[in-house]
Image (cartoon, one colour):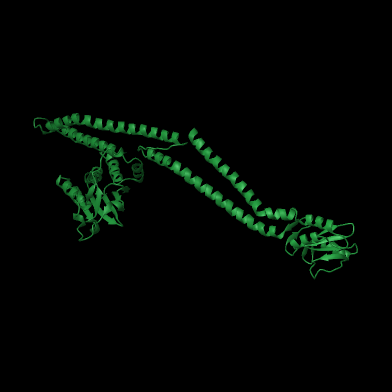
Length: 472
C-alpha cells in the first residue's frame, strides 16, 4: 500500500536526517575540543611562527626585549649558536643545557630533542637559532610535530565520541522502534483478531489510516458473513423443527399402533430414533454457531462442579441407562467446595456430550468415570471410559477435525459429530482448555481444565460459600 510505503519512507528519511545531524555534531565537538590546540600549534604562537619572530628580532649581540618577553610568556628558552657551535647568547636556558656544541650534537638535537627538551631550529646568516620548549609539551616525529596535549586528548575524545554516537544511535533505534510498534501493534492485533474469525475495529490517523480503513472494511465483511451464516443456520434449524416434529409424531403413532405389522412398527421406531438424532444434531449445530460467533449469551454465576457432576449422573441413571454401562464418580476432597464462575447449563451440556460419546462409541458397553480435582488453583474435570478407544491416526484426525470422524465399521453408528466441537466451544467460552487422550482398546479420555482465575474455594468455616447464591 502507498500509505505503508510512505510511512516506512518517512521513518527512513528521519533516520538519515538524524545520522547527518550526528555527523555535524561530531564535527562541531571536534572543533571545540581541538580548536585551541590547532591554533596553538599552527597559528601565531606556533613553533614556526615563534622561530620567524625570534630570528627577525635577534642579532649576534642580543635579543630585543619585546621578543624575549613573548618567549617567556610561552615558557620558551633560546640559544643562538655560531657556525662553530659556540653561543652568541642564551635566554633562560636550563642549567643542564651546555654552552657549546659539536657538529654531531647539533645534527642530533636538530632532529627533535635536546636533553629531552623538544627544540626547533632556524638557520640564519650568522648562525643557528634554537628555541626550546618545556619537556612533554610536544611530540616530534621525523617530518612533523604534535603537542602532547593533543596526543593526550585524542584517545579521550575518540572514546567519548564513540560512546556518545553509540548512545545516540541506540536512543534513535529505541525511539523509532517504540513509535513504529505503537502505530503498528493495533494493526497487528486487529489482523490476529480477524484471523480468529472475530470482528475488529481500528481508529488510526496519519499515514496508516488507509490500512486501518482496509482492516475495518474486512472486519465489516467478516461480521456480515458471520451474521448471515449464523442467521441462516438459525433459520434452517427453526424451519426443520416443524416437519421434524410431524415426522416424530407420526412415527410414534405408527410404532404404538397395535394393528400395524411388526415390520412396520420396527421401521417406525427406527424413523423416530433417527429423527431424534437429527433434532439433537440441529440443536448442536445451532448452539455451536451461536458460541462461535458470540451470539450465545453466557449466564455465568458461581456453581459447584462437584454437585453438577452428581446431579448429571443421577439424572442419567434415572433416565434408564443400559446395564452394560456403569457410572463412577471420583471427586477429590479439595474439589468438593471448589466454586467455578460459569454457565451451569452449558457445562452440564459439555459433560453430557462427552458421556454420550462414550455410550455411542461403545455399544457393547463400558465403564464411564467422571473425576474432578483441583491443584494450584486449576480445576480439572475428566470424562473417561475403558472402551474401544481410537487409533493414533484417528486421534490426530480428531485433533485437526474435531467436528467429524467416521468409524471404519459401517455396521456401527460410531461418529464423533458436532458434540466434541460443542464441548470445545463451551470450554473456550469459559477460558479453559481441552485435551483428548486415547489408544486402541484402552479407552477414551477427555480432560477439561479451567484457569486459576475462574476457580475459587471458600475458606473453611468462613461462610463465604453462603455469601452469594450457588447453583448446585
